[in-house]
View 1 (cartoon, one colour):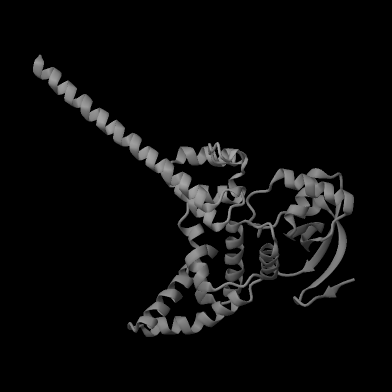
View 2: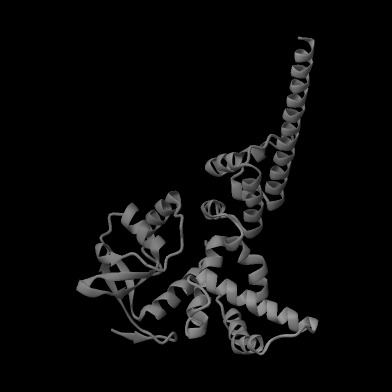
Length: 306
C-alpha cells in the first residue's frame, strides 16, 4: 500500500534484500564504531528493527539508501539476516538529499563535526533553489560560508552606518529572510550568525586530521578547538593522543584521570595539556639554544688557544 505523508512524498513498507541496497551518496558519517555496531546488531536480533531504514527504488530492482546506514551496517556485518524492513520512498534527488540531512540532524549520536556538516547540507539544499546562490562556490561548505560571511559583512556595515552599495543591499534583501527562515526551521533551530561565528570555523579553520579525530572520538566543539591547539603545538603528540584515545596524565591525587577516554576530558583540560606541552617544548628549545651558544663559545676559545 502506498501512502503520502506530511512531507509530501509517497512511500510504502517492504522487506528488502540487503544485497540490493546501494550506499547513500548523502552520507556524511565518517566513522562507525564497530563495538557499537556489534551491540546494535545484537539488539536487532533480539528485539527486531524498531525503525525501518529509508530507501528509494533504482534501476534493475536495486535500491539506494537514503537514511539508516548504521542500522544497515549492523544487520549486514553482525547478523545473519538477509532481508531488512525498509520504508521505500518515491522521491527525486532533491527530496532524497533533504530527507537524508534531516534524519542526520535528528540523530542523537551525531558528533559536532557531523552535525555542522549536516546543517550545511540542509542549508545548501534549500538555498539551491536560487541559481545565483549556486554560483557562489563549488561545494556546499564554500557556498554556505561565502553567503553567510557576505550577509554578515553587509549587516555589520549597515549597523555602523557605513556606505553599502546597491548590489549589497539587493543581496541582503534577497537572501537574509530566506536564510533566517531556514535556520529557524532546522530540526534543531539555530541563529545563522552564531553558526557562522562558532560552528563553521571548525570546518574552515581546523585541519582535516583534527576534524577526523574529532569525529572518531565524538568530541564537542570546544574539545575540537582545544585538540586543534594540541595539533598545532606538536603533531607527534597529537598523533599519539588520538591513536590511544586518551591524554597521558599523571595525577597521584586522581588516578582515574589515566583511564579516561579523550572525550571525557573537558576542553579546558585538553587546552591546558596543550599549553603545558608548549611551555615544555619552548623551554627545551631554549636549553638547546643555550647549549649551542656555549658550545660555539668553547670552540672559539679553543681555536684562540691554538
